Image (cartoon, rainbow, N blue to C red; front, side, top):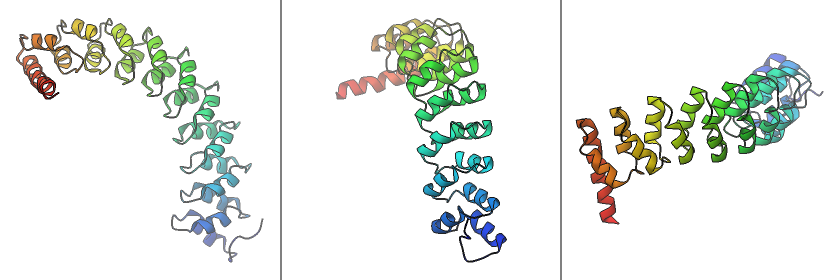
Length: 264
């Protein structure tokens, strides 16, 4: 490979390769340097332009591929290629990269390694179809992440409502996309945390809230009082609750909602 800049001093070239102030055009040249240590430094540099990362991704050196896989400017094309790497460390860096596209994650979801599939289930770009497949995994750790993922479809979340794992159930009760039918199933579980989460959830159905209004836990009844899906007639009942704190919350939201209805 040619010497990219007008100096034979390896130390100077290395300093330039590592510096966040080095211009992109120099980093492009240093990405072709004959010294592997310098090319590795360019691959680590967060200022390295995308087209140079595409060149570096084709290197056989695993360290360079590792740095490219975790680079914030790595293109979807590069990440898709590196997702197929035979090196476990590189595949892990790809799945940890927030830019990794859904189609690359779909490939990684087939990987036998548990840690990789758990991270795919957790990833913000994982496709609903991929999450639907991962929801059937026997490993609890994978299903927990699927239940927590904002991209998981309502159909898959509904299927998971029958899961026996406690953390899967808790994550479902927290997921903002969990449908009302699934929440109605979760409320049957004798868990104060889950029932309170369901009581606060904006997808909880009125019938489920009516059931929760009878709960002996005052925090659950307070959560029900603040739920916008609670019918006004049931909210008015909570204004007569035996506990002052529940009555205060119910009165606050009754006035708030009544004012909105009058304004409309």
